[in-house]
Image 1 (cartoon, helix red, strand yellow):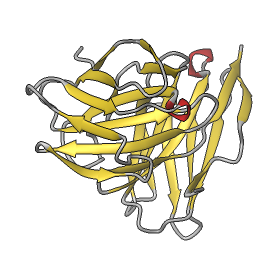
Image 2 (cartoon, chains in turn purple, orange):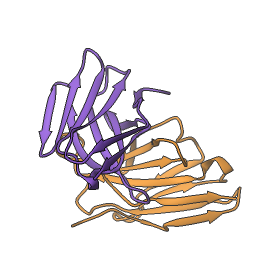
Image 3 (cartoon, rainbow over the protein chains, first blue to last red):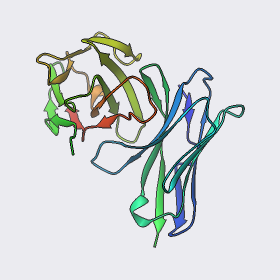
Amino acid sequence: DQQVKQNSPSLSVQEGRISILNCDYTNSMFDYFLWYKKYPAEGPTFLISISSIKDKNEDGRFTVFLNKSAKHLSLHIVPSQPGDSAVYFCAAQIRQNFVFGPGTRLSVLP
Amino acid sequence: EPEVTQTPSHQVTQMGQEVILRCVPISNHLYFYWYRQILGQKVEFLVSFYNNEISEKSEIFDDQFSVERPDGSNFTLKIRSTKLEVSAMYFCASKKTGGAAGYEQYFGPGTRLTVT
């Protein structure tokens, strides 16, 4: 089952630069898309979401872009900070069913 | 700040035994969820629960699993006759409403279940 894909298992970025995390999905019926951050030994923490009828949502340093025709979304973090180092999960929602991607480990280097 | 709590943090059980994982969601939340993450793999949705009944469940959530909100505050996941392959980190989450925008899921810290 590969409904939500995050093809980059890891990403390294210099502090202050932009981090771009990508996510692809296959099911056009998803209503919402969400990004979560996860530190070791903790539960996922919600970052930002976007409705399937929007193409952009911004919240502080975090912006999510949705390209519905390409079934692709991305999370931009700018400027990146060392505290952003974590695993980032893309998730897609239909009704009350959530499908997570495998995650991308982001390392922000000082 | 209100948070979702889970007990125990680590549960070790023998194959074939029943386990109950407990969660206390945030008090004014209405939607409750269980997820699991097998070591090194992705977070997998198990079940969602609203108004005292299951609203969605995944293929993983078979007859071995059940959920309950026994007393209006706890939300439990029961796993009957545990098998080795259910060893995982189990996360509980709760959400205020059914929509996604602005009403995110809050996750607990997880219970690590080890079946020996």
